Length: 290
Image 1: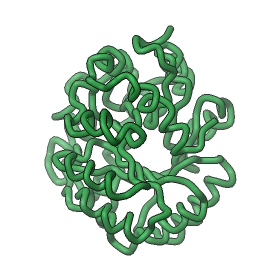
Image 2 (image 1 turned 135 degrees about the vertical axis):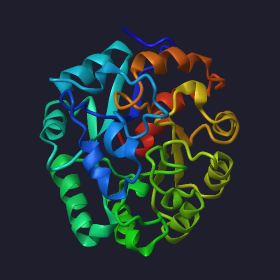
Image 3 (image 1 turned 45 degrees about the horizontal axis):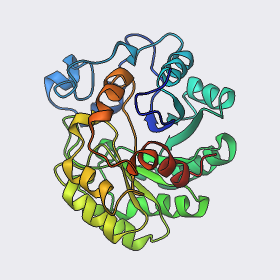
C-alpha cells in the first residue's frame, strides 16, 4: 500500500509501542506532576489534548506492529528513540537498519554521564541524533542553561543533530524550559550545531520561523500535530523561503494513528515543490540517512 501523496516518507518521530497497559511515562514524569488527573487518571501525558488515542499505542510485538503500519503508508524509514534499557528498540535497530534509525535521550542534569552515553550510542548503535523533552528534565533546565552545553558540544563533535521539544508542553508541567527564544542563544553559542524543533513551538510558531530565517542550523518538525493543525506560519514558511527547513514527523503510535495522519496530509496547503522535501528529502539530508 502507498499513501495518497505517492511519495516515500521518512518519519522523524515514531515510537515502538509498549506492552498493553504500560504507563511507564507516568513514573518518568512523576517528580514534576502535581494534578490528580496526571498522577492517577490520564492514559496519555496530555490526555486532555489527544482524545482518540490509537489502539496501536500498545502491542505485544512492537517491531512487527510498527513496520507493518509503515509498509501500509509507504514510510520507508523512521527515527525511533532507543536506550540501553530499551531492548526492543535496540533489537529493532539491529534487525532493520534499512528501515529504522535511533535517537537517544540526553539529560543535562547528568552532564558528562549523558555525554558518554551519547558517544557510546553513536559508536555501538549508530544513532543519528540526540533528543530531549526539555520540560521533562528534573530539575527543569531551559535550553540556554549552560548545563546543556557539554551535550551540544558533543553533538557537534559527533556530527549529529539534537531534537528539542519546544512550545507549551502537553503534560501539565511548567513551560519555561521550552520557550522558543532559548534557541537563539543555543544557535549563537554553537553555530555548527543542528537543532530540530519538535512538538509545534506554539504559541510561538512565528518566532520559530524568524529564528529559522536567522540561523542556518535550525529546523522544524511537525511531531505531535495532526496535519489539520499544522501552524499556518509554518505552512507559509515552507511554501516560501523554508522549503528546506521543515521535516515531517508524525506521533505514531503515541497519540496519532497513521490512518489519521495520512488521511489529513493531502489537505495541507503545501506547494508541489515542498512535498518531497517535507516528507523525505530534508530528513535524509539533516540526519545523513541513505
